[in-house]
Image (cartoon, rainbow, N blue to C red; front, top):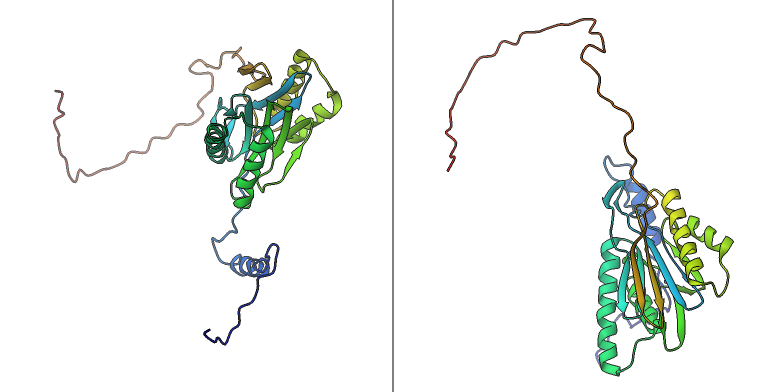
Length: 279
């Protein structure tokens, strides 16, 4: 064997935070330079929610997509297809949520063809959290996975860093605090369909009215063992008001007190005439 002056050292297990102090020093040193700012996390706005009811799962989401303080899309779809009876709500960066759910749907289809069995909600959740954990939060997608399989109805929430929860009701997004307050106040086990739909609708509306990043319409997705009912535009809580008054004023309404005209003396330096082609 070849000899070496630096023997091989085994890496310590677990996460490494050795660059944390270096980053703090760089940020404090470079912050004094003109024009330098430390990078900040992109803030996104969404309200998504889901509950378990008597016969299955109900997912809900708003339809506003924002770019900083600009409304980029008023009617986007945030409830994504994974499998025939498994759907996923996405919050966070819209592109990350779209591509992640598309990749997951493709993988689930291949898994179904390979095994010859319908997918399980737990299997979908496991693959999603493994994908997100692999990228350590750089994929900014907060997901709610709901569906019905051979073992019953299941509801999971998956966070961008790979952790997950299994609860009877979940909310995510910037309007999650407002939505979860509605669930904590009125949720109960074995709710009927109409009562559960109204509860999810009210939770999403609470996020729409209390969060600037959430808005527009309410989408619902009812998943049971019999099938899926996607209720696009289930409710429109924010309606554009009608203009009731006239805001045109007659000439002379505002009195002109003074008027000054300053003539400008200009010299023509160059003049050219171009003929427009009308054919």
